[in-house]
Length: 206
Image 1 (tube, helix red, strand yellow):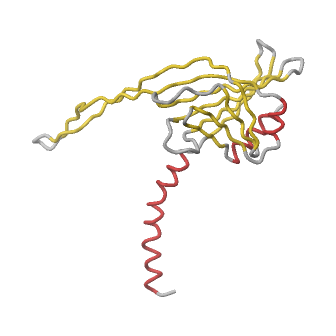
Image 2 (image 1 turned 45 degrees about the horizontal axis):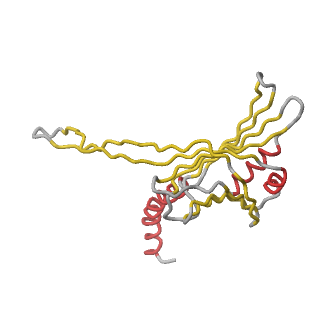
Image 3 (image 1 turned 60 degrees about the vertical axis):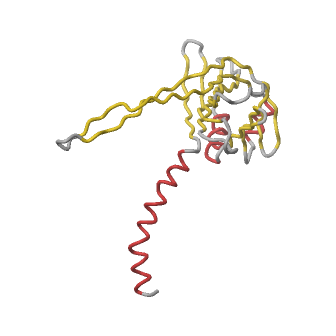
């Protein structure tokens, strides 16, 4: 390796890494995270296990999808009875079309249709103020409100149960995703390998 090439790598490689770091961080922030928690409910005498997933993007680009939050909820009663529910929340642009009442669990390329129970559809408004600064004659700056930006989004809450066939499919899955239809759009939320592993752990807890 020539001396000039060694100098180029020494000086320019850190600069390239600094440029790529924000891209890496941004791409990670667009994926989803998960959190698993367990506690015993003294009132109902049951064990409650919850796995929370949050998605900040769908596989499809340029859709009305904003984000999704899912709570996989498992209860084990004092008699050993086990039940599974999924509490789902979708945030969409207000111009999105009505969501179908059937979603699909896509597990190892096989689709499992699930009827959902809609609970609530609301429109929320998020207001943000924009500020600017002006320089005074004495070289100090003063901030002032230059405008107000309002963003609206549609918030949809619903839930559905999981049957044994779907649970077995998840437990043996290599890949898994959720598909929503709001014709003509679709929103596909794919589980990462880490999240799928955490979901299998959720089902295995006794």
